[in-house]
Structure formats: C-alpha cells, structure tokens
Amino acid sequence: MKKFFTFILLSVAMLSQSQTIPELRGYLKQGEESAAAGKQLIARSMAGYNKTKLPIYQSFLAVGYFFMAKHDANVLNKYKHFKNGKEQMSAAVRKDPSNVEIRLMRYISQEKAPRVLGYYKEMEADKNHILKWYKTSPDMALQRYIESYFGLK
Image 1 (cartoon, rainbow, N blue to C red):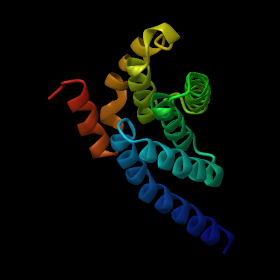
Image 2 (cartoon, one colour; image 1 turned 30 degrees about the vertical axis):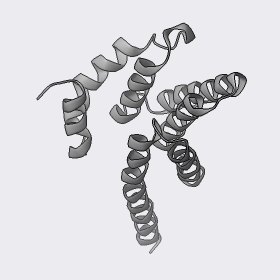
Image 3 (tube, rainbow, N blue to C red; image 1 turned 60 degrees about the vertical axis):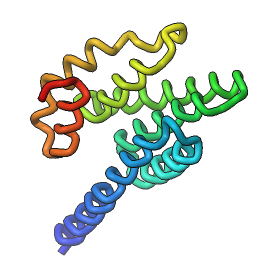
Image 4 (cartoon, rainbow, N blue to C red; image 1 turned 180 degrees about the vertical axis):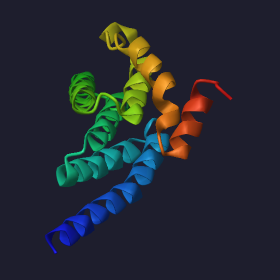
C-alpha cells in the first residue's frame, strides 16, 4: 500500500511538471520582448521550484530575471536582476549539470548577455554538452528546438 501511494505521488508530481514546462517555454518565447511575460515567467517558475525543488524550474526563474534585467529602466535594478539570474542559473547547473535544457538556457543567456558583464565563460562547454547529449532527451520538442537553434537540420 505504501508503494502504491508513493507511485501516485510521483505520478502526480511528474504530470504537474509536464504540464508546467511547456507553459514556461511559452513565457520564454515572449519574455524577451515583454516585461509582463518576464514577470509571469518569474512567478510561475518560482512557484514550480518552491513546490518541487527541481533545478529545471530554477533555470526558468534565472531566465525570467535576465528578461527583467533587459526590461527594467533603472540601471541598478538591471544589474540586480542580472545578478539574481546568474546566481539562479549557476545553482541550477550545479544541481543538475547533465540536464540539456538547463545547459541550453545558460548557453543562450550567455550568448545574449552583454560581453562587458563577463558572463560567457561556459558557452563552449555548454554547447559541446548540448550537441553531444540532446538526442538522448525524451522531449522531441526540445530536440527539434536545439537542431533548429544550432542549424543542425
């Protein structure tokens, strides 16, 4: 009976994660151009992370902070958002360094960050990891996105 309840709990957790990740990806697509989408990305990913403690949510949270750094008019707030994003992304990668989607988010974030901020040092390692392991992901949408992003097909 105990195993049954554990199975149910894990199934519900996985189902809720699978429903949320596509939603967060939608905010990723809008967040670079929309401060409102960036704020939604922060709120939704923070809720997902607080509920599950999964690093994938932490990486979405990081990208939300990077978006807010772009949209905020105040220079001090821009840097604060950037610093929060960098800290969250580093923590997510430390917790799950083999996760291709987390490494992809860090790669793209570093690619888009102004060079003067010095946030580009892991790009080569991330790209190598992504290209080596992306086909092992069971997420076909992620595989197609990576192939498109890197011009593989």
